[in-house]
Image 1 (cartoon, one colour):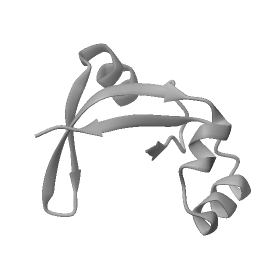
Image 2 (tube, rainbow, N blue to C red):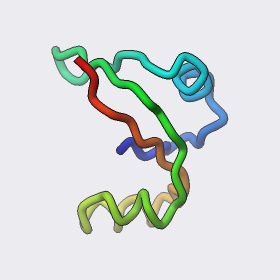
Image 3 (cartoon, rainbow, N blue to C red):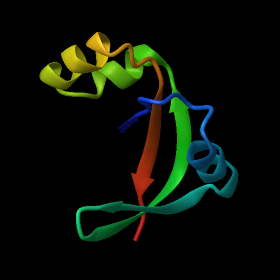
Image 4 (tube, rainbow, N blue to C red):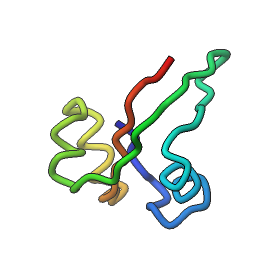
Length: 71
């Protein structure tokens, strides 16, 4: 689950959805991801830990991207 703090109208989200797969870098690790899908706010919030939900609500995050890890 990726909280879209800048919304879904950014190039990397559009490109990932169009391609259907991609890579993200987290620290020194490259993670391949697939099947990106925008999901409703309630489902995104439910999939995040409570403390994270509180922060996301404080900064008005309402969009989430669900991805599957792909090797």
